[in-house]
Amino acid sequence: MGYDMYIHDPMTDEEEAAHRAAREKFDAAVRERDGLPQALPQYQDAKRRLDTARARMEKEGRSTELSRMVIEAGEEMRHLAVSHPGYDAAQQKVDEAYEAMQTTNVSYFRLNIHGMGVYRTVMGQLGMLVTDYDAPDFPELPDGATWEDIDAAKEKPNPSAGDRLPVKAAAAVYVKEVDTHLAWHPEPASGIAAHKLGSNDGWLVTPAEIEAALAAYRTHSAPQVTALLGAALGDEGDSHSYWIEWITYLERARVRGGFEVH
Image (cartoon, rainbow, N blue to C red; front, side):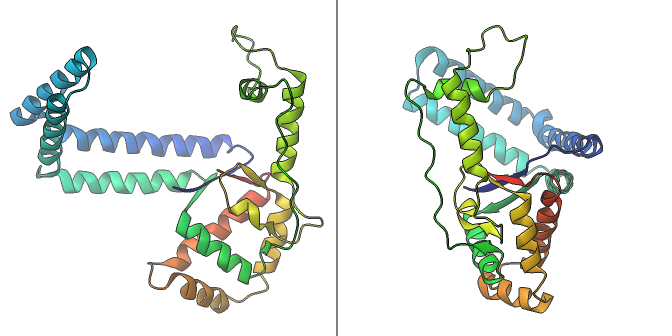
């Protein structure tokens, strides 16, 4: 569980190409690692037992005996994989390729539940959040519209899709109302509305909010920020470097339509 954040505007063609190339290298590293034990007779025997048990499950239904066979065969395959002489080096390549792939995904940033709680605390102390306001209520589903209607209204037009549901006018209006609600913030913007960093409802943190938050952040010195992070995180690794990545992410989102929180 955590918070997945995505910059609103799409990546440029160059950024997409870099991310695609990094993903291909990651996929290749995973295939190389996973292919290490496949030449071993013991691995092939365990795989046959696993495939046989799964096939029987589909035909006969799950049973205690078949579940045990699947678990035992799977555990044996995992043991043979991690005990292979080349596994550690192959796994290191996977880890490095994953980090490179994450670095090229410039539209994405993630915080786990604890991390977001810490960042909300520190951002509040730095004056980057707005907390004293009454947010409007979430729009109610209009009469006569279903969630299936709402999903249809959210779909992008695709002329080749012959089975697309007709879009009800009320559903289309509701989708616009929700988009407006998700982007709402107190005016004038003086920071990020705190509720947008408190749930996974797809809130849009707008450029105006980010601009105000960064302006407040810049009034503090690096030692002040480091001290607040240290007090909030203690000895949890290199807390300052990830915070800098967060500030860099906010700078990027500020000029790319803001970011969504999921």
